[in-house]
Image (cartoon, rainbow, N blue to C red; front, side, top):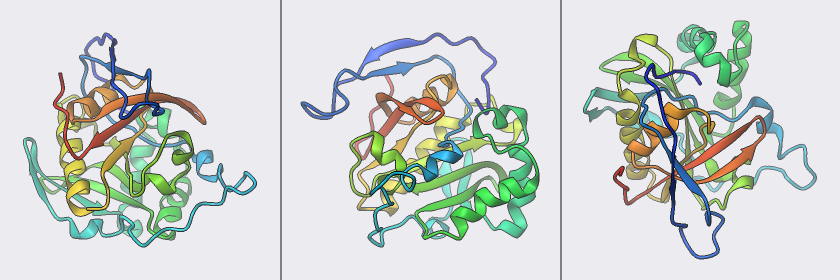
Length: 253
């Protein structure tokens, strides 16, 4: 867990209706907690190479509708301040991201602690790629306080583990600055970013995330931002809650 809520949390299983009869969601349960905060959403590093390592599992070609226009989205008002995603510039932002990755609370899940070149390789793989994943800093009232990855979930190895739809867009997130943890920012920022994704990427009908099922505060924040747990899935390195937010937002119960 990259951030922890200091309060106790109790898990409450709540049945979730499947999207459609016979879908992979049938029988899934949503897990709701009374905690809030911290987000560390990421597939293990080795997962990226999973498809390429299997016969006939090369990543599918993209269709030109990639999330590489994030730099044009601009600021958006939220209940906690003005928020903006700023695509990472390696020469400017590497020291900051590297510092966050070496915070023990972040390193436990992101597994990118160590020398700076480890963080650099992680960022450069996206920056030098085809644009299907965009690393960003989250700027709250002009202050960099979080790290985000906006990616095409349907072009990601994650798509092998759930019934992906074309243009599904995924989110990985961590709140890197300890001063911003435990303040209830997670759900507000997730709401803002999910709404921007759905507004700016008109072909996208769903925003997807896969926090570790043990990360109570993350799953809670997603739930409060209108996401629903559609299934629990076993990914390399973790059991994840498959969180999906549709265009029609579900208000938290």
